[in-house]
Length: 353
Ligand code: FE
Image 1: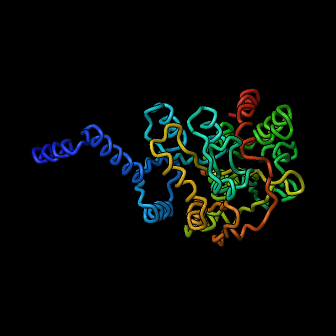
Image 2: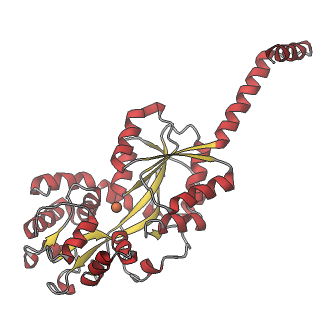
């Protein structure tokens, strides 16, 4: 085998083609084939419908996806540690606070995609074309109708009002979902306004912050708190559950869209970016573009009971649709992410742990 290769090379040499040229051609071709074939995906999302999402991409493009699934924080940490040697092509994260962190830490690279800027409205992507939102969630208020009236808990401001003393439950203030909300309040009302709000919420707490969003909703059903904050998809997940315990929670708790007469309900996203040192950059862009298509939008958003963000994508989730329409806060998500620096300072000052 080796011998015959040599002989063939020698024949080429005789025809006047240098082996160096041949070798360079062969290597170049091999690299090109690799580049067309693979996508290394770092994902903080892991839902069942994502399987179909990835399989369809491979079927359509022939590009094989190597997946690394981690929690949001470990994923960002891994990217930082790998630095210039990172094999990551695409990074999927939830919450603008984390996407913005990746952006300013230089973990992503800006991309030019006419398709993405046409399909994803400017509100839902970064101001430097590094990250793009592909689905959205709202941060809404949940309450026990036996304990409080909807009109007393239908604004974020009222969670900090003394009339709700001893009634409020939230998860940890330093969780990205809370950082983004406080950051959004700081963007609108200034740092002093957001600090007054956070101080008021701490003063109104039924118990120290603990657990995730679903735990806050369950705590309302259990009578531990009268009002709580959660992202919408956790509520829809409970609505879709066949577990009698979840059905009982849904029966006892009501949801209200906050700030409908004011700025609108606080919104956040799941999003993606091309990694700074992506070895398969063209494939990475192609994957993000694929995520903005109607079929992928459906899988991506429905997989976590979120709203699809690409212009013109129909909502094919009856339980989510049943929540109805509402006025979302139009604040750009890049501002929401940026606000988390002020938010962290505020948390430290008011002792919102
Ligand atoms: Fe979540």
